[in-house]
Amino acid sequence: MRTKQSRHKGFASLDALASLIPILLMLLILWQVCFSFVEGSRTTMERQQMFNKLVSIADYTVKSGAVMRAGSLRYPNWLDEGLLSGDYSESLKEEAGLEELYIGMEEPPDRSMCIYRLVVGGPDKTIKKLFVCGG
Amino acid sequence: MQSIEAMISLLVFLSLASLVLSAHPGPPALDDSLYRMQLAEDAWRLLYLRGNLRDLGPEKRAMVESDMVEIGKQTGFCIFMQGVEFTNCRGGSVSHADLISLRRTVLVGGQPTTVTFTISRRYQYQ
Image (cartoon, rainbow over all chains, first blue to last red; front, side):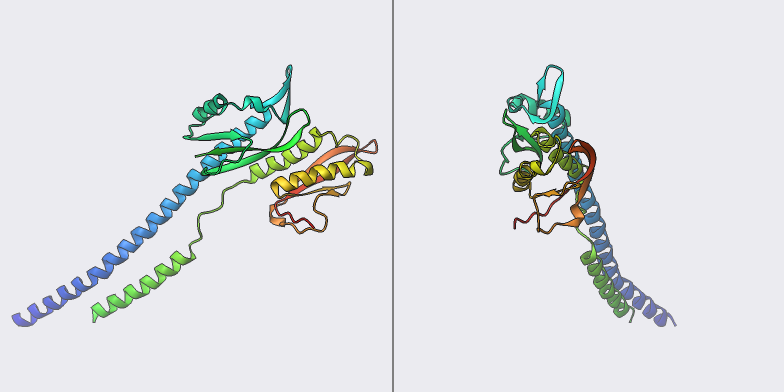
């Protein structure tokens, strides 16, 4: 009788041990799936935040920040390129909390995110693109 | 016996997990609806600043369409102005998913006329 009971116990332990490995594997996979979902959402949110900041900076620049003025009159989308100095983008970079910010007429080759706005420049109102890039 | 069942369960779970992972869409695209609207406003504003939207008429077609072509070259936009039938994309195909339309009132032959100004991303020169 005692021998039979101990045999049963041995089987139960062996089975439990054998099923522990798949259970652990399942938990590991589940954890990895959850982690990848959370990581993906975080990355997407950060990119959207960066994009929104660049859109706001570009909109401010073409509507007020660096436009032609005649007294109190502003000309949105008519850019005064002389105002796009280093100080201009530096101050906006600090206000927006960005690590890098480029505002200019030439598209930089290596920036993580860039948008552009359509503007005219100069007295002959040549059609140009204003690039706003951040990282 | 139970070990075999556990292994079968694991196999089923693994196949389901791989199915879920492969079906999981990539990161969602950025929401750029406001930005696209701003680009459409830019295109309209540029035509206005270039001075060709004052009293539109057939005689202004060449000048307005020339500006539209320039914008199209730089951005890849197809631009349409319904009401006066100006475009830089005659005969080209466009992506209807990216259409942005604005309604604006302009003078056409001295009469206030509402035109629909539309831009689309795809641009094909004919």
